[in-house]
Length: 77
Image 1: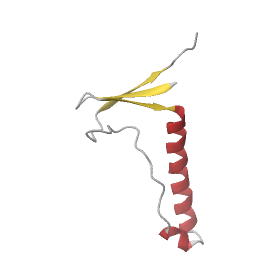
Image 2 (image 1 turned 30 degrees about the vertical axis):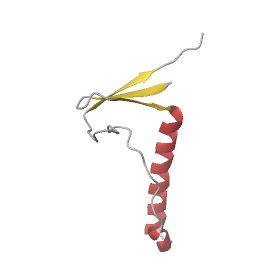
Image 3 (image 1 turned 90 degrees about the vertical axis):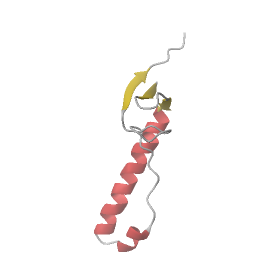
Image 4 (image 1 turned 45 degrees about the vertical axis):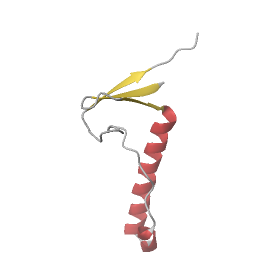
């Protein structure tokens, strides 16, 4: 199963698999939890760098957010 991203501006097509989606969600959750802990008692955590989050709803080539997402399912026969 993959996610196909078609850019309406430049016409490029990119594919993300499930691991890419999981890694992006994990990085977002880690950044949120680090920031919440930094607000609480662990102020030194605020100075640690955030994890790099890849924006899946943005074209990698031109940076446009005018993209269409569609799910592609590969069946092994």
